[in-house]
Image 1 (cartoon, rainbow, N blue to C red):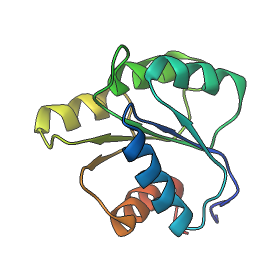
Image 2 (cartoon, one colour):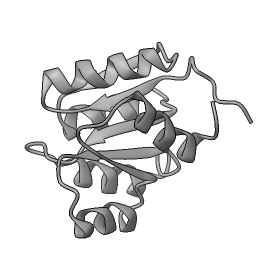
Image 3 (cartoon, rainbow, N blue to C red):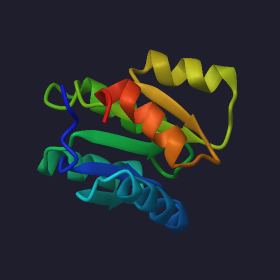
Image 4 (cartoon, rainbow, N blue to C red):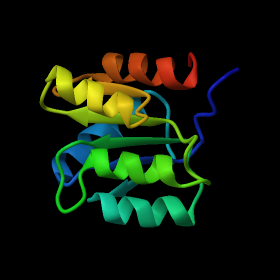
Length: 128
């Protein structure tokens, strides 16, 4: 199964620079349909309005964290199967476990490059 590079991807991060970095990395990988949200609440609103193929979310955000967003997505009947990759600056084992238990498909520790992003996305979506 090949990955549709035109599928919409939602990036969620409260740090504008990080949104730009992730967006640029996705463009390098050939993805062009990229949407952004600056917090979990805004992301949830977008996810309920539009169909996405992947969510890439930061962990540390206010008022709704990436982990809370993930739990909301997994609790929503329509969204629960959506591929979800968590990004964090902390490589704490308990965070990785919490993200996995909440239903996260993969986990990326900052800083990362296009190669790492591609590897993590491939493990979730299939090779591209």
